[in-house]
Amino acid sequence: AAALILCGLATACYLAADYGRSAYDGFVTALSARTRQSPTRWRAALELVACATAWVLGGPMGLGTVICTIAIAPSVAWGAMTWPRCTRG
Image (cartoon, rainbow, N blue to C red; front, side):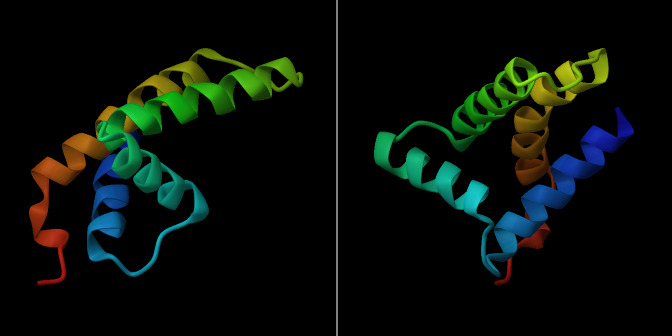
């Protein structure tokens, strides 16, 4: 649980700093802007698609993988609300 909280805070800080985004984060941001839906919803959907794809291709799927897949998007959203000092200005 602590790792998910830390990951959420770190990702929120990284995105808020606006020093550039990974392709994945840019894709989530673009989908959110185009559809006017929350980035949390898109991040969760893409995480589920990635997890399902990995499982279909024969990747290992344990309880930890499922928990992380479900919890990472809300964790990033919580991190963004909790730690607004990460912004540049």
